[in-house]
Length: 227
Image: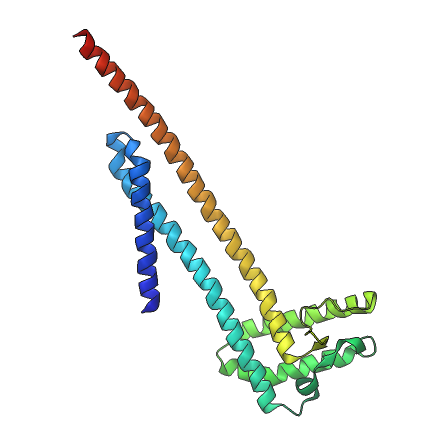
């Protein structure tokens, strides 16, 4: 119900801006073109406003869902596998040079721990597998970095320089949201371009129509003067 109300408000705002633009700009169009362009303007503003709102709403819903899933998966691991060394203590990144294989083993164990519960939460299998593979690949890359430069540059590591269930899930959420934010930016940028093109085109047409109208008024006044 709340979503319906929000969309109604967004559509009303789109109509308002469209009508306002009509009064400021489209009113200068030639009379034969005004009615159609009044309608087109409202459609353009409503469409852009609705798409913009939908994209922003989707962004926040995805972020909220990821936070919720991360919290539930982390709590599930703590509640049901508190005796697991990785779940209980995490992995000290300062020891990665000594035993990289231990980290890989811990992540594989975590996979077996969370996979079943992820299904119960309704997370699609293909999405879970993608997330699992992404974490493993990122950890492999970070392990190379740690071994090379001697320090962690890992978004999967917490403030204490440990990899934990929570830090892994948070790192995954951060990575996903970076992609989502990029997509949102691209869509918003395209919307701004479309709006800019429409505004530029309508201003140009309005200016020409106004210039033509002014010229016709001057001619009419000159004709009256001669009569």
